[in-house]
Image (cartoon, rainbow over all chains, first blue to last red; front, side, top):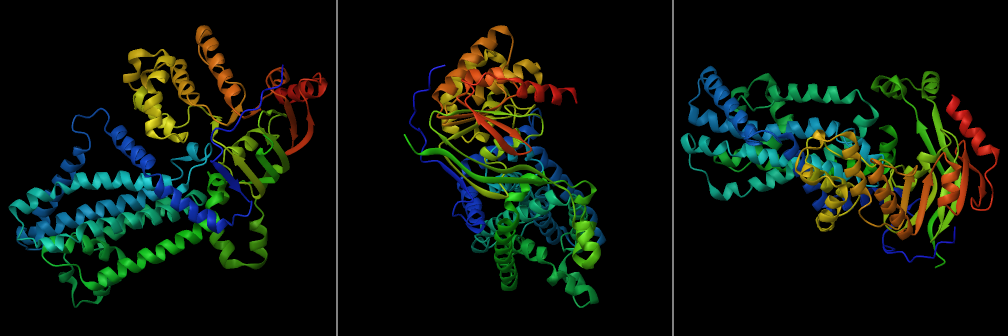
Amino acid sequence: MELQELKYLKHSEIVYRVGVGRSRFSLAIEDVASGFKSYKVWALLGWQDIKQRYRRSVLGPFWLTISTGIMIGMLGALYGQLFRMPLDVYLPFLATGIIIWALIASLLNESCNVFIAADSMIKQVHVPLTLHVCRMVYRNVIIFFHNLIVLVPVFFFYGKEIDLTNLLLVPMAIGLVALNGVWAGLILGTFCTRFRDIPPIVTNLVQVIFFVTPIMWLPEIIKGRSAAWLVEANPLYHFIELFRAPFLGAAAPLNSWIVVLSITLIGMVTTIFTLWRFRNRVAYWL
Amino acid sequence: MNTDVIRARDLRVEFPTYTADRSLKRAVLKATTGGRIARDSRSYISVRAIDGISFNLKSGNRVGLLGHNGSGKTTLLRVLAGAYEPVSGSLEMHGRIASLLDISMGMEGDATGYDNILLRGLMMGLDAKEIRKQMPEIAEFTELGEYLDMPLRTYSSGMQIRLAFAVSTAISADILLMDEWLSVGDENFQQKAAKRLQRRVDESSVLVIASHSPELISKVCNRAFRLDHGKIIEEFDPRQKTMSSPPEASFARSESL
């Protein structure tokens, strides 16, 4: 066999480098940066996930809208009576709370499996871990927007006037939930890959938190009682408040914004630290 | 061209093997007890799959990796693919890498053939525009026709592999990684596939292929590494050295296990 003639590299600008003058810290930063940057890839993959899930159904993701709608309708009718509350107070509160909670809960639950589900890809090709997480978050945000439709009839029939300037804060609230989903996905995903006992613990916690967070019951009910601190001390309450309050006629209180923004900041710093220490181990743990 | 396409220095890869030790309980105990018990429970077994491998590959190098099962061939390929990051050592690679280690990676049974072309292409690092441009060519190569509009799970396994092969070999890359020479489909398709794969190999700047077949390596490669226990124990020119007993012997040994 004759010697191959020498070829020029067609893609010589693409360089993959490990261990050569690159600290693990800078690799962690790069993982997050290039993960966010490949939004075309994760958006398409996330969209494919949705398509796959509802491939052969006529209504597709609108099944979610319907099931969320039915749940809110039933719970609203029942608990409205239990709590002796008029529907025009209770239903908007319940609907906004459940919809944002559904997003938060699925982000937390799916965070646990985000790398385990992508294992064949992680073991074959070099892709930033952040990309898998962004795909998961994006997919859940799409589902969330389908659920959002439920709010239309709720507010049409039962809603009070909504202050539009307050509503401007809603996209910001959704964005913050998604951003926090990214760091939670990176941290939980990493640790759940290593310790397979964590996912059931998280699922369980999420279930419990649903009941201790004011989603089905109004925070006013518990005011002045001994368990009242549970509300303010619950970080997820503040995330929900950010989204819910504008629909109910008031901007979220300042302290909710402070809590959420601090959690976001602490979470991001912790994530970089986690990636710095464990990013390159994830493939080996799968 | 004198610069190295791949430069590897003292690569080391270790696999932690957790069984039930994956559990949180152990880790918590480890953290809280300290001292003697911690030292004992810390000693999980780790397998050193790559143990200090160094090499430089230049443009035009076709490298064959030989060695029996568990000698580190596939792990080395995965390190080169960027999936496993070495525990220590350094690695520098220039150019687009095409990993043909598992060509059906990322295929979805419920998605159509066309969607699968897109998915697989994305996972190989192509962007959607590039894939759409290649789509007609890929579709034609598979000879699957209208099947491409149907979900993948309705395909026979041979058809699935054909699709996977067509996408995986759709673009030329600078660095081609292969675990055994890919051979797919029925007789007709096999010839067509072999031609296409050969073209990709010719276009690539560097090829690294792991194989159990010394004949294949002497046919395709101009350098060969023999691996054993994660080390390169021998480098030779497969075109000159007539393959003597060692590869056959070790191959036979591993097969008889």
